[in-house]
Length: 394
Image (tube, rainbow, N blue to C red; front, side, top):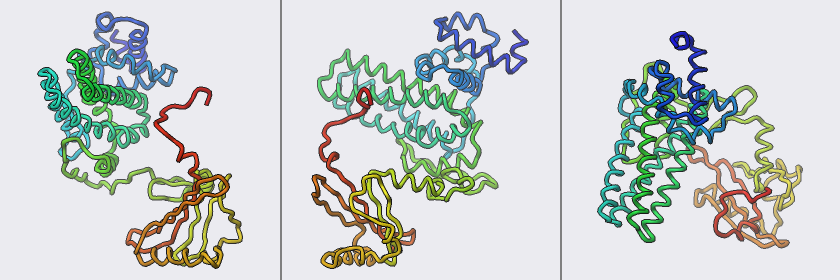
């Protein structure tokens, strides 16, 4: 067996074979006995790499998720032997860990309330616990994108799916607590919720955090920290992250590549911008700070007629004389700062048309023009209830 351990590629293939045998039905104990030496020193990075490789070879992510806990179980002794990496206050991983500690305390309070059938207290503890969703959102919307740039994608997809399972469980538990609490049903749901959340604590501490700390640069961690406040925290208010020596200011997104126009969040080429604007479900017209028409989107089902001849024309000249005073009032109010929006709605040719005007201002608050957005909302006004999935056949 030592020849496999000393050869990284062969070792990786052996570890992948362990996972394959788990999926074929072999037990954790059986595999631990068969591959004891191989499994004695497996690290978080190796586990992530083999899961990523198996997905690349065709193993569905859903199958990885189904047996995720079994994967952890077979490697657990080795993972438990690894020391935890240290992080300083303000570092995103330090904050994640503190949130897990806080969530664990709320879980304990929730369990105690349910054990004593104190349903009002249980509802309050569950309400507090659901704010822990901010922890998952920061992982999904901020941390995961950076990891995916380092080709760490399969483990993040599996974790996201488990987050959704947890969200579904606490939604089910909340509904049960509101309607008619029953000790047995509530107890079963809470046991599942508690186990899933605590299992995720373990996966974060022993799989996610070590890989993230290994892969991401100081600049990327600074960028992650800069974006965190927009999502928020769970019962934690972190200090500022200490600046690393010679670390440039973080950027929220990768710099645009050649041919792209740098935008506030990312970059697009001219053709991409044109495609984006012409496929929006709204008509857009831009008038600059001097009241000159500079752009209109040519959508497939434009509501009000536009022609290229209006580009460069004063917007006042684009309206009938008997209505131009209304346009002028909007522009004057925008320019003077008396208002930022104006909206109207009309019925025309069987359509219900929503027309909105928005003042554009730069970072200094200076007026830079107006956009007109027009949309047929006839079908939107008829929507009721919810629709979360596509209909069959779509």
